[in-house]
Length: 229
Ligand SMILES: O=C(CO)[C@H](O)[C@H](O)COP(=O)(O)O
Image (cartoon, rainbow, N blue to C red):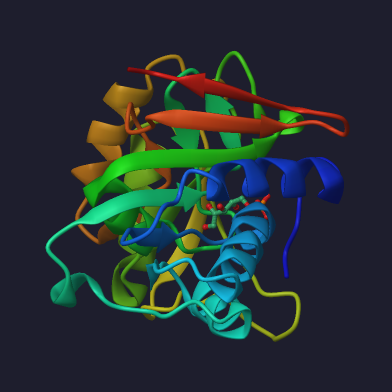
């Protein structure tokens, strides 16, 4: 699995802390990435001990992890609501996130966005004053050259994400390509999000603006929780 950022211990602390929020009867959005995987593992242990929950996976990877952990799965069309979604992030500034390091941000945005409570799990290396990592765009394959030019026109520097374990580009679970687009420091996440959403061929971008309800930040010795309500 792709990992980045801080220690595995810090990620585990954050994931386990968020998993503790889940109670009997909940439908839980299961995020993607190495930190969300710790939450999935902790939920699996709780299910083993009798917790009654159903999970909604946000990617092939989180589905596999949940199945291995023994979490019963459901789908968005089979439930009325998602009580809580627990997901990782590549950068966090206040209530804004950059996601998509695992190329799952399109499905993640749907599940995280519909959840009554969106809980983010990160290690402390992910928290910043201003978002500045490249913004991943999931792009319709045929539209890739068009989107590249459009991103340049709005001041970005797009780079097609390529796979390490295969020749050629990364292809998302939904068959899209990924353009990682550098804009430097992102002073106006809402404005950039709206610009990127308006580009034909962009399926989804990795800016999650003001969506977060709670952030669990793990360090090697502790976890801090910030709530926004
Ligand atoms: O957005 C994501 C996947 O699309 C991940 O949540 C993000 O990349 C964080 O991953 P990790 O916890 O492994 O650092």
